[in-house]
Structure formats: C-alpha cells, structure tokens
Image (cartoon, rainbow, N blue to C red):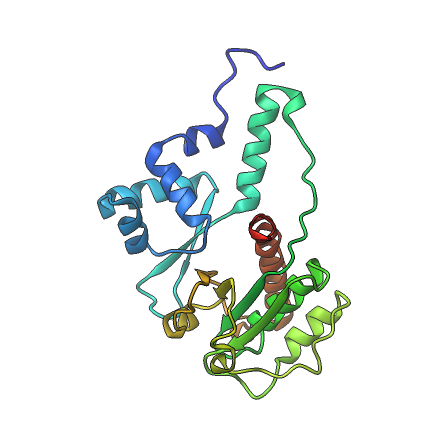
Length: 244
C-alpha cells in the first residue's frame, strides 16, 4: 500500500482540472483544432492553448499540422497513455484495483473510413477493423478523389500481417451516400473538409499523415498501420457499447 504522503499521480494532477478534463473528453471523440476546442469549452483561446500545452507536456495530447491548412494543427488524445495513467492511479491507490480488460467484439454496426485517394489510409483502416471484429460489422472505405488503384505499400504492409487487399479497388465517396452508416471516420484533413454530412452517423476525424508522401515509404506505412490499429483498438469499446 502506498504511503499517505506519496505524491498525487501525474495523470490525476493533469486530468482533475475542470478545463483540462473537458479538453480530454472532447478529444476522446476525435481530433480537433484549437478553435473547435474553444467552441466546445466556451473558454478563451489563450486559456485553452495554455492547458493544451500542459496536456502535451504531460504526454496525454499530441499535435500535428493540418495537411489542409498548415496554419492549423489538429490535437489528438493519446488513449494508450491515458490508459497507462489510469492504471497507474489504480496501482497507487490499491493493488486490487488493476483489472484485465475484456475483449469487446461489436456487432451490427456500419462504419465508413474516408480519405482523399482511398488508396492507403482508409483501406488499411477498413482491413484492420474487419480483422479485429471477425467480419461481425459492416465496414467499408471510400475516397473524395479516389486513385486508380490501392498503393502497393498498403498492400505489402497488410500482407505482412496476413491481410490481403490486393484485389480491392478505390471507391468514390458518392457510392456510399445513403447507406445508413453509424460511424463515418475521416483519416486525412483534406477529406474532412470535403466529406458531406451523413444522416444519423457519428462523424469523427483522425488526423493522419499520408504515408505515400513520405521519403521512407516502408517506415511510413509501418507507422501508419500501428497508429490506425491503436485507434481501432480504442474504437472497439465504443462500437460494442452501441451494439444492440
């Protein structure tokens, strides 16, 4: 049992502040820009930026320049770091509070991933979510300006994981309108700006760099798959909670 004089865990110190908690819960749904967080919290931009800086220093939040407008940045909640922090709080309070997470497999949900070309990020996300849910949900992907074919780097990195999308072809977003999706997830900043509203769908944004534009394609695709798979792991409990 930790001593009563033990310091407050870092996660508690960061998350307990009311405004920082509102920022964390806002970012839990998807990546947002400062002006969107200002609107969400109703607080001045300088105050929001100050607390975002503290969350970034604590490793709970990261930022990435928008590929649509480089003057903007998207903020992202690192859910793995939050999980570690929450686990550390349990350990600090009492050893019996640590619990093994149960696997969650949602069903009867419809998810659409969208990027610009539908040649790398969105087909990767489609394949990974389908694999993690054993085809128990309807998942597809599309592009606002689809490329002629799937990028070879996406095919190769997924084959290294036992997944084959070699026969798949990019699809236009227009072919997915009116399909009754529960979740529409944009994976690049340009696609977010071009993606129309889908009736009754929960639309969120994951701001991911385009691996096809990197100098080291192999490393970029490895990083992209790891990042998308991490986000999908954290999406599963959300989908499972919504499943009828």
